[in-house]
Length: 313
Image (cartoon, rainbow, N blue to C red; front, side, top):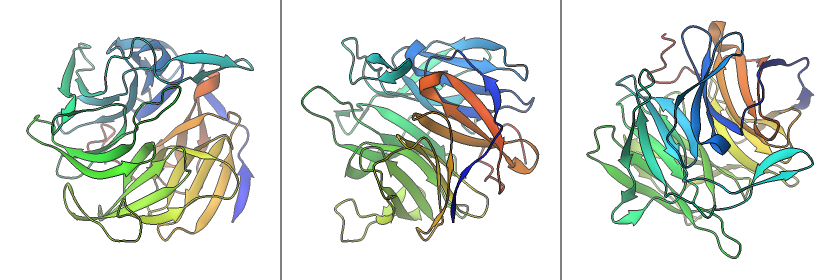
């Protein structure tokens, strides 16, 4: 139970325009989105960057699906500002292009819009997604923030063939990171503004079991003391949930029962995403978004291999 600064970090890439959504590749490279540049970027093992797709808007969370294509949560874009030399989001932009789920062929860069609405309601700011073993995916809609109001977001489930999109939880307050427990009986959702981590019991793929007392029907697992906001998350092989934490700048590790495991501090208040790679998935790759970097560090426990991970078993 400790606060830990792991040093030194290895800088994987720099000069990125608010990177998020890291996805590992079999050759040791990775893919990230650059939200402020509205593009998807390949980073090879030397740190060389190549743009592979330009979906526009605000490409955000990313994951490979069962067909080998990359699936993207597109939040429709942000306005941006610079604070103390750091690039940070500043609400909904004038050229907001609408939220959607997109499928990208990384070989050709072709972008297809898979979903832009659910039950007649437009998606506002899809943020993050995770695939289950059946090939469907859970995703969060963070909503958009404007000068005087903000959308209430939610959790959704969808299929890759365009045949199903289902709202599972609404309302949530700026839901962001989403992940599945190793047995896929729990779907985790982190809320940005509240700094809360929720667990929802999965009754069947794309079906959750709700319970009181909270209106969202979830189990409250964590909300660290002091002010912080949660971003994306990843799950360890043994079930701990690793939540990227804004303001504090680091990774909060939470056990499945909600117990605090440790906080790993990192040098950017916009520490946004974490994924695992390397031998035995014992290396963490983290996006330090406001300083435009991806870094790696040894991780004390192995990460959980994602379904349809192109790096294999």
